[in-house]
Image (cartoon, rainbow, N blue to C red; front, top):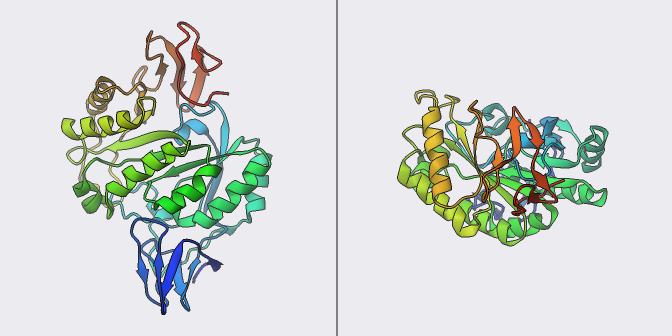
Length: 338
């Protein structure tokens, strides 16, 4: 059973075919067929979204869970997602939500953009996060929600794989306050074999969003034997430093999931090595996620090295930031602070 039809944006048509320009796959979609994401369908030569308003997950989260450590820490964000994704990651942790098959339904609980904004306000959240699955595939719904959110003073946060085309980035960026982009590895081989995608478009999205003034943080899930070499981590860190050394980099531990169950959990030592590489290459803020190791989620001043924010299980204690500066040496701590 198909979802509710809503006219899609960012496509062209030739005869009865449509060419989707939302993400870097650039799907050529025949009549009656769907794109790789399985939630955008060609109906009579027009592209439609099947997931507009079809919210499949919604809840209030600490903003730290996105993860966003340098954007209004301690605040609550209303998180929403529809089904669907434009990646086919073998290790997907939300596969029941993201990995829609073409013949499957795409329905959730229908929410108009006004409903989403009202629910965020009722939950006393300061922002709406487009997250969990892949917000690129519910682009039109995200954009309409984000526009209404701005009108009532709510922020907009996006957690994405970054596989957007430039035109999509340019449309959504003015509505976004912050984004966490998942750079899954720094090799085309990984993206092709593990995700069914390419690295280049993700890096382009990071560049474009930064140029357009969106606060960025980056997440990389470290998978033993697949993306954990010193050379690869060094190149990824160098790429980020080339954009801005102030971009926070979150390194997370892999746990066997979905179709990638033969690979062991990431050792803490590997994450610590990645953190050391990031700092050595010039990044000022490198964090370790989903591991319990003293201090690896804390923010330190990049100059005096004093701890200015401590974190534990999505709880944050701001102890040394005053008006965006280190309370000890007055160095600017990059981010958007309350």
